[in-house]
Image 1 (tube, rainbow, N blue to C red):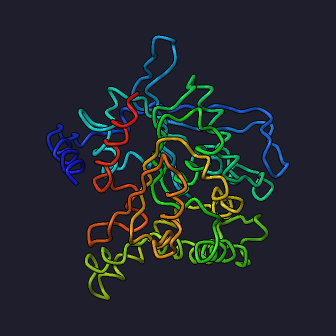
Image 2 (spheres, rainbow, N blue to C red):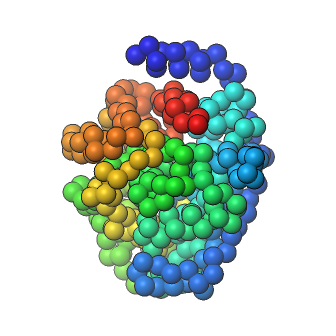
Length: 356
């Protein structure tokens, strides 16, 4: 407790991040990976991976970049989601844990997401059926193109959290530290698999989907999928307090779902949901030696603590500190991963522990 108290006092004393326009600090880029082979056996002649960066790479005496931090987004997200004020204003400003005057922040769009290659670019359901291993391999190749041999820190939220465990098992030599947020290192099964399957099936069973060859989005199926995504991401205590009447709840959720639908492509969403189908790091987690702080929240519908998976898994990883954030009217359920104030002190501690 004294350690955490000291860390919290340090954070309070640090200069508050200005309400910066973080997008104005961003540099966008693309790499094209030729003849990319997927685990499914499919290939793409050219796989485009989009990324954005904040800050400037620093090189050590041997000429290696030593300040690179890669942050990986969740299902359906993009690297730009980490410009949200509840994340960026807590982390990137002067004196903050990932001060961009000290760190080189890399924000990739995963395969099938954002401005990276995806089904909606034209191939539709003929797009290769990627999984998390494919996504991690593309991230590894991206780092190579950027000249990064070893990351100072790998962070990831939700799907990106799961990518963190894949990274720690498959490429530990490239990680100095890792901070996965909001996931479990276990096969996607039970309710977690079921709601994903229901969302994908809702789209497929909409006649307007037309086997993926629609001329207009299959809105009914997409709406049902978006409804499930909203439920999965909600924090029960927070939304009960914020929307305590029927009228308030309706006024919030109806336009929120409509806004969600407007950002989606049905085929892209099916692929995004199904990319988790081969994920299962649990058999190999005992080999993980990367220093890591893994953070979940007690009000996470997707990764509920009552499953009893996290603590036994953490005990098998001697280099891992597991933190469970208690549920409150302030936490945001699964989305607590993006509200950095809840876990920023743990990030400071992880960076301190892995300075050398």
